Length: 185
View 1 (cartoon, rainbow, N blue to C red):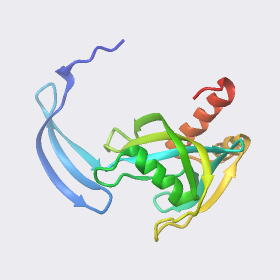
View 2: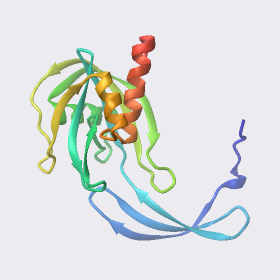
View 3: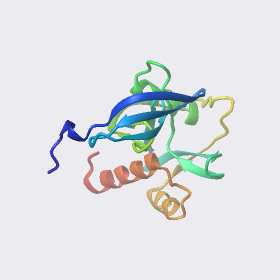
View 4: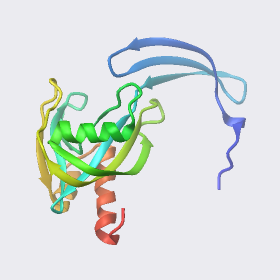
């Protein structure tokens, strides 16, 4: 087992802000390395996000939308960024309803993980939604989504085809698989 030690910690010497956007910021840090030399680290700051594995009638609720950074459509579980000071569970409930129209009677945490720790501090909170009831969707004005409920087999096929290729949705499908095999999540 690896031993946790501060001996390998990098100490920030200087931070240079590069960009401040609506969602992310970019900074370049100069850091002191454990051997005494310096290096630069390009860091994306992100407020965090919440996502929802929502199962209804043996199917998973997903949204399909165009993702400009990848220049293609993607099938994903409902998700969105946290507003300043927002509780991740509240964000998950909000995103589920906004994107799919479904409300969760109960949300349980599944996992929390950093999406790309080599250059970003975004932490994503993943929940499972239970006791779903249908309502009205209300996506953001710049969000164009198609909502669908897919089978497990479709989800696996979409992963193979890279129609599902984001970490949060792949993780959700594997959590669903574990649930199908063990009855526990």
